[in-house]
Image (cartoon, rainbow, N blue to C red; front, side, top):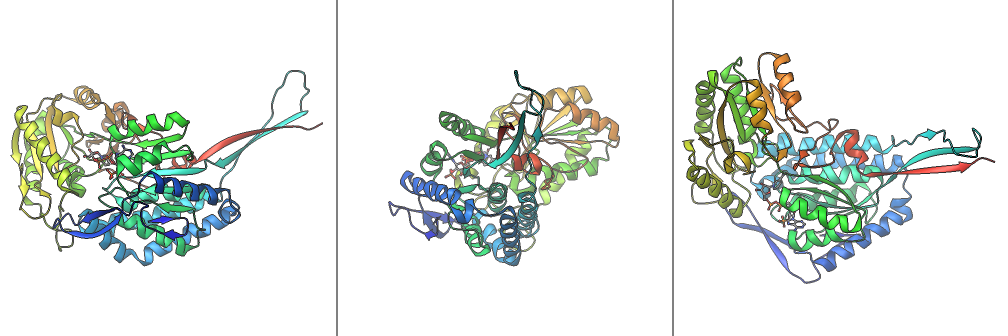
Length: 479
Ligand code: NDP
């Protein structure tokens, strides 16, 4: 792992196995950082943040290094995509067409912000002073040392979503990747050094959540925690951060509703709904895992989604033609299988899939459950696998009510031929993002984040960048 300029082992010497989800075989090992290593990394970041080379770098230098980093990721795109697929299991085409190019685009987008940080001038009114005897302005300053903790579903992309805005703002960062998928974060750190970032601007500690992650979130030497992962861990991180008044941005779980209205072409809606849940084997925070279909088109849409599920090519990510790769770990496979059992115990009916696929690796069939109550666990809890609950609704008001019956508020989708009708429904759904007649979308310039228990703060866009800045108000007496 990278601390300052050193590629180092954990102080304890302990290592973690990294397995290929398609075979369950160990591909390599990485250091298992403990609190002592995290402390060293935070100190290295602080030294860089306060030092001449990084702390004193001009906005144009940060922009140039970020652009160079984007170029280097692009140059090594094929290799990075392959690492991602071996580490996470996802089909190589997804790594090649989504993960890596989106990371490149996002780093370039953030590079542009480095030179566009602006404050304001303000005319203050103070008792006892005349106009123009005081002058005030605001400065946007980097928040400081950032601790970033990320999940395993889009390892490179989640890393750059935190690293790139932090560096554009002038922060130094300590990144802890998920223990299941640490490899592209390490490669990213290597490329950051090659791009010219001074030592200590980027540090990567590999390790487990409850030890390395918890030590980072609770460290009094960091100024901000940026976390993506489950709501349960997010709450713990938020509590630890509050102890030191550390700034937080939390991108947490979701149970995103896909609402189909009765004027749709059922084939179009079925294809959109299938993509919303089965993309990346359902291991997506915005996965459309609750499908609400208006009764008139319910059978046709159910039939369409089931047909797509039944035909999906399941296989190793490196195998050509694979549409559905394995789940990331045995733990995740057990979790998904457990939810399917729970759904059936709660009275749902299985209409597609339902089981593990094969015996080697951690594959699960695309699975569809019908007849679950809107309050059932499979319709309320984040499963994070290729499992879809389909429920009938009785029209726009009913759909909005069941969609909003959730502790989550991350994302959603509405399908209708009438843009006016779809927009009216979308406006009433309490989620941070929502799409109309399309799948979930991510664009560097569009803010992303959750309402309710899906998080605090935004990533991407100007709002996401500003999460890495503080505001300082300066007042000057001009007499
Ligand atoms: P976690 O929330 O546990 O993991 C996310 C990150 O947090 C990982 O880096 C993890 O480390 C770290 N972490 C875990 N525990 C702590 C802790 N106490 N303090 C600090 N950091 C910690 O998700 P899981 O990997 O356990 O997945 C469980 C479920 O979470 C999934 O099934 C899914 O429902 C949800 N999830 C949601 C995501 C989203 O984007 N909305 C992303 C990932 C998961 P480590 O890898 O070592 O555990």
